[in-house]
Length: 325
Ligand SMILES: [Zn+2]
Image 1 (cartoon, protein in one colour):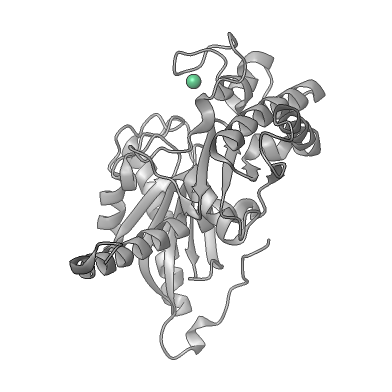
Image 2 (cartoon, rainbow, N blue to C red):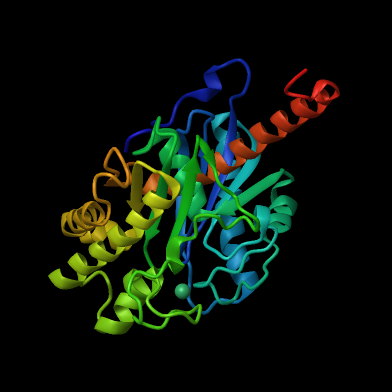
């Protein structure tokens, strides 16, 4: 997998290497890993999320994963400095509480404090789709690209937007949640109450509810039509925000493969005639594969630390703050 290193003999170095404990809270699985400052994963593991466990049983599962990583860190002679979390939404800023749609037992679950209590470390969290945008912009398909959108098309639909090199947060931290763009006016009813949202037409749960088959067993028409609708949303996002690239991941999109991606790019081209956005925006697959969510979670922590340093630096300089002085 691109951008992910093999385990290294970090213990050989005189000073212990600092790593980030990265945690991914997905709707169907938890994962945790140790990430180097360069985005390599030294070690990682994952566990399926049982459908009917209560809140504490779920946290015990997660605690076991986290504890395993902390033990690995000790064995490998690396020092865990901070925790980064990417979580399925909705979440409160910094994952102070999380209420993932697919984890019914966690409603306003105080994830940040619980992980901080467990590890004794500072914890930074964000939405999984925003975390993925950080990862793909850092080491993946959008590396070196200053303006792009990362979309996940899986059980639900999410997204993260990077403009001028910075991931957007928005007023409530949910900027980039593209799932409620209306791609089929008068279409299927969405959980939000509207009709024809991308999430109601192209997400895994939507596909399963209207085809009666899991998205892992799609017909050609479903793969093609899902691509068209995602391409339609991508076109709106690109023309509104002046983006040149949309990176798409998530189990549904990746599972539908070339049929999906070709249909999405064609629809995007059709919706963005040449004078509207130049050069023609591209739509492509994520590149970090199943490492992406953990690298993204780690990147959430690195971003938070970097921004804190920048804020302190700005505060120290605020005496001569006028740009004209
Ligand atoms: Zn909706």
